[in-house]
Structure formats: structure tokens, C-alpha cells
Length: 225
Image (tube, rainbow, N blue to C red; front, side, top):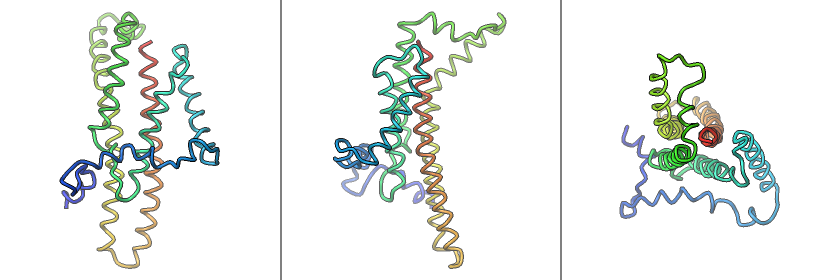
């Protein structure tokens, strides 16, 4: 039962046992019609409105560190994670963001680039950031240790947060769907209604997690300048 339950996260297929399901990571680019990018329509304006809101918010978070195009990487990060989270809710589409291998591949390079840039160009600011203002002298070594550990685990917390939320929702929906064959007929409609509510909740989680990852990455970027 448990192997069947977690098989929904298996990246392998029955075709020569190849992990071609990872190709669904880039399905979001093909999911949008060609006309979406070049012919203005209702969906185009909705998506443009969302991106402009994100751009303004990221620009505010970056403050004096903002320069032309600096928000593009975080908007792209939001879009990439959002499409993968959302498409994973459809049947028979592999959810790549439910794997630590992908989420760590996103968070670790970002964190490394921020840390390298900060320590190479603003090492004095990085040292000052380890000790909050007004810290007693006796607590300074402990604060440095705590801040160092906090910085080191950041890519792990970003990756685990995204992966855990995706796995939890998909497992719950799978468990509910497996209960359909053992429930009496008068409870089937209640089960369907519950799954619809859960699907709406998971759609919200897909958006929220994309937003949280992008916002936290923006905050980490602003701290190193």
C-alpha cells in the first residue's frame, strides 16, 4: 500500500525505465498557447497584471539595491515554480517540485551566489549582520554561531518547505481517492465534495509556495548588499 501510495512521486516510467517524467518540468512553456505571448487577450492581461504587482513588490524589498532587471530573476523563479506546482495538480502529470533534487537545485545555487557576492564585495556588512546592534559582549560568540547556522540552513529550509507542501497535498488527495472503492454509496458525493475543496486548497498552496520562495529569495538577496 505504501509503495503504491508513494509511486505517484516516482520519476521513472515504463518506457525503458527512463526518467523522462522530468521533461514535465518545462511543460509550462508548452502549456501556454503561442498566441498568449504575442496577441493581447484576457489571460495575457491577467498574467501581466500579476507580474507587474510582483515586480513592484520585489522592487520595494530590494530598496536601494534595485537596478534595471534585478527583479526579473525572482519573477522568473515565481513563474517556474508556479507552473510546476499547478500542472502537478492535473492527472498523469509528474510534479517535479515534490522532489528535493529539483528544489535544492533551485535554492542552493541562489543561496551560494548571494553568499559569494556578499562576502566578496561587502564582507564588512556580512560580519556586522552576524551580530545585532546592542548585543552584550558575552553573547556575541553565540550570536555569531546562531547566525552562521541560520544562514547555512537557508537553502535546505527553502527546499524542504516547497517539497513537503507539495508531497502532503498530493498524498492527501491520493488517500481520499483510494477511499472511493470502500465507502458506501451515500458517502460518495461527500467524498467528491471534499476532494473538490482539497483541490481548491492545493491550487492556493501552489500559488502561495511560489510566492513564498520568490519573496524569501528576494529578502536573502537584499541582505547581502
